[in-house]
Amino acid sequence: MGLLTVLKKMREKERELRLLVLGLDNAGKTTLLKRFNGEDVATTSPTLGFNIKTLEHRGFKLNVWDVGGQRSLRSYWRNYFESTDGLLWVVDSGDRQRLQLAATELHGLLREERLAGATLLVFANKQDLPGALSAGDIREALALDAIRSHPWCIQGCSAVTGHNLLGGIDWLLDDISSRLCPPD
Ligand code: G3D
Ligand code: MG
Image (tube, rainbow, N blue to C red):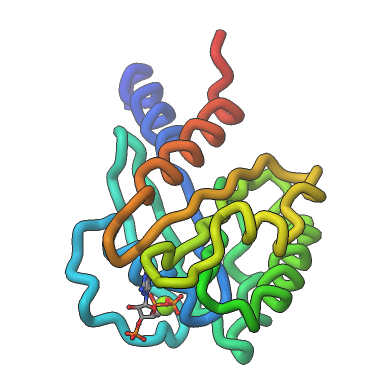
């Protein structure tokens, strides 16, 4: 292999990112990924196990892992942590009853050593639902301001309408790429 080919391969590798999508079951993780990928979102069934999708966005190759969020599957989440660049934590903004549980699970994840280098994007999903809590309310309920260990951002969105999905993902990619490829 010539030097140029090696360099090209290295550059391609740098633009390949690993994103992990987590959250409680029913938060809208699978719908969000489908919408982002331009697929039909009318038929989404609960994720048993995981889906892996490879998406292209802004010249990045995104390997996205969508792991089921049911209680029985949560102990398996840790199997997917290795070399994660970005963590997308998805919250159902209409599910007030399980917000505390979502907060506990999220803060537990952030203590995992293998997620230490990851950027966190919280999606306050289902903003289209009447009575949904705002991104500000979710920020408070999840105690995001207490997070010092990871760069983070919260974005209100709707996976069903697609509202604000791109804005969130763009922030995530900007943050990851500024860490991985700092400007000269
Ligand atoms: P999960 O992968 O996190 O478990 P799913 O969640 O993507 O399977 O979505 C769970 C349910 O929430 C689905 O409804 C889905 O249509 C709905 N949902 C996901 N995102 C949104 C959203 O932004 N707004 C609204 N209103 N609903 C959303 P069903 O009825 O199929 O269970
Ligand atoms: Mg799912």
